[in-house]
Amino acid sequence: MEITLKGDREFEDIPSLKTKALRINLNENIYGTFAEIGAGQETVRHFFRAGGASGTIAKAMSAYDKDFSDAIYGIEDDGRYVTEARLRKMLTHEIQLIEDRLTRDKHPNKMFFAFANTVTTIDFAKQYKGHGWVGIRFQIEADQDYNDIVLHLRFNENDARLQQETLGTLGINLIYGAFYKHKEPKKLLRYLYDHLDKDQIEIDTINFSGPAFENVDNRLMSLQLVKNGMTDAVMFAPDGNNVLPARVLYKKNILALRGSFRPVTKVNIDMFQKSYDMFIKENKVDVDNTQVVFEITLSNLRAEGEINEQDFMDRARLLCSLGHTVLISNFQEYYKLVEYFSQYSKNRMGLSMGVNNLIDIFDEKYYRHLSGGILEAFGKLFFKDLRVYLYPMEGEDGSIVNSENLKVHPRMKELYKFFKYNGKVVDINDYDRSILSIFSRNVLKNISEGKSDWESMLPEGVAKIIKEKGLFGYEAEEVIHNN
Image (spheres, helix red, strand yellow):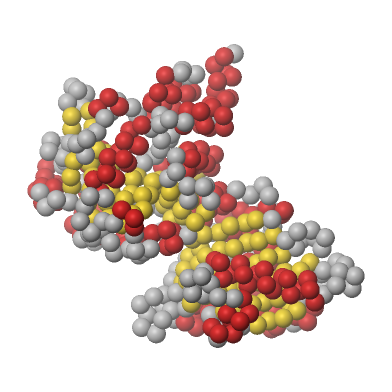
């Protein structure tokens, strides 16, 4: 995927790392602590090298030894060190020390900050490339509460030294952005990749909090991560908050449903419920270790070449309100989605889809970019411990179309039969035939025309949310209709 991070910076000079560090050092009111675990003191060294660091750095430390780290920050419940909880403990501890040791009477204008990271770089065998948490807690006014920016990164380079240098670059960009770009969080996000690209590092989770970011919606910021090419996918928990995909998917049985969900209909929920009932009865599937994911591809969020962010918000809000976990991805092809899940789990997986989706999977045009064509794609898709649960479609003549009578391209017939009769595709038979004629596009059309019969096409409670929140343009269109 081509990275598109420069955006409106194409025609402006990007400050060097030294320039950024020096500007911070020369600001007499910026003062704080650097605490870095796992890759050396890669960020703070830029400030030392830039000059004038004595006015910026209160303390720099690397609690590298685990026993010392535990003695300073406490022991995590799960015994791990590279976690968000660990990072936040570090930020809290270091800010408290600054507040305890420096009086406001002596430093009335100081904007205190704590920068921290806890990371693991690539292992000796080069099997695990490494990842980490990076964050800053900072003030933009001396008498204001603190703000937080916390992110998770995944290293893509295959050399520990290069990963360390990349981490230092990201740290400089984050600190500089926090103090000088906090009013423009979308730009701040893009500027994190100054002097970097996705071949070096991937940011897959970010959260902003505090008075400087009271109007920031972290779900929209996550969308920017995917939109800007910083990551391939982001995830939202049922409470609507960003969540680290690795934490949700690790070693789980995964059942995924892809759709536009614009809006989510009774058909979507029936497909989910019936495929879930089948999935948890499979061998190797532990119901207590199963994660259901509703996935929306970025291509389904585009309108005239641009992402309609409000439209995204509407879909995600509705799915989360129904208690579901939502994944927004850059994956057009299903095999890429399965490969993504396989990063986190080798356990049995399932894909729930409609007939049209399955027919599209067997369309060769989606695989022309692969040297092995559709066979390579299917090897990646069905080589895994995966099964497709197929929801039927009602034909124009009222007949039911399922895996037994759907039509693929003549060249694909034998390939389809191979996967079908090897148990990779199974029909959902216990479906609700009365709702097969429901389509999201018809619901949207009826909303725009001010009709009322769309409400019966949606799961319980969804129509109420659409009306109350004015989703999908409901309020504006209703006023126009009534006038």
